[in-house]
Image 1 (cartoon, rainbow, N blue to C red):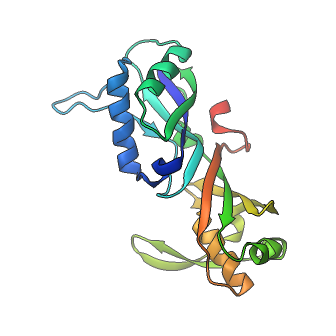
Image 2 (tube, rainbow, N blue to C red; image 1 turned 45 degrees about the vertical axis):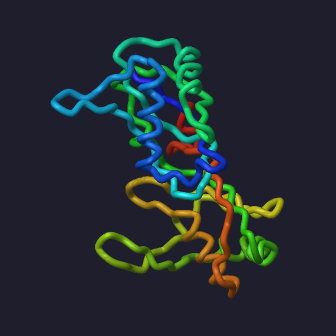
Length: 217
């Protein structure tokens, strides 16, 4: 079996990079005493998988990882043992036992919901959001391992609204197209004639193709 685990990454822990997050989770699982499953071979390691890496500096409220287990564990026991071993800023909120052949969370991921709070020029940026979204195309420069190329951000913005001093965005997040909050903010700032501001970004949840929470299956 495997345990789909929803966890939050908040406070100072938001500055942990993805590799360090993996190490922190591995250490916590070892300390927890849970019967986690290791790979075979001369260098056994925990077979953790995460639905989507989280950018450094971004908080996550409902991040998802899957933990293969060597034997069945009650969901409540898994949560309690894992939380007792996790460092400050990381906390598991839900555990769901699944068969090993259940589709991987990473494969089901389609979009992500964000709350983006600009630290400067917030009123101007939020006021520009409806006209910005009404554009047929939103060109932006995408940086890839092979170089830079122009792309269209508009089809990757699935929803956008301005409310209570923040932008609430649902952005595409799958292998055929992914948008990042910083790309959205940079494009919106350029549309508004402003430099891109620093923002406090929180990823509020991960969604499947039907726009349901990924943990809901």
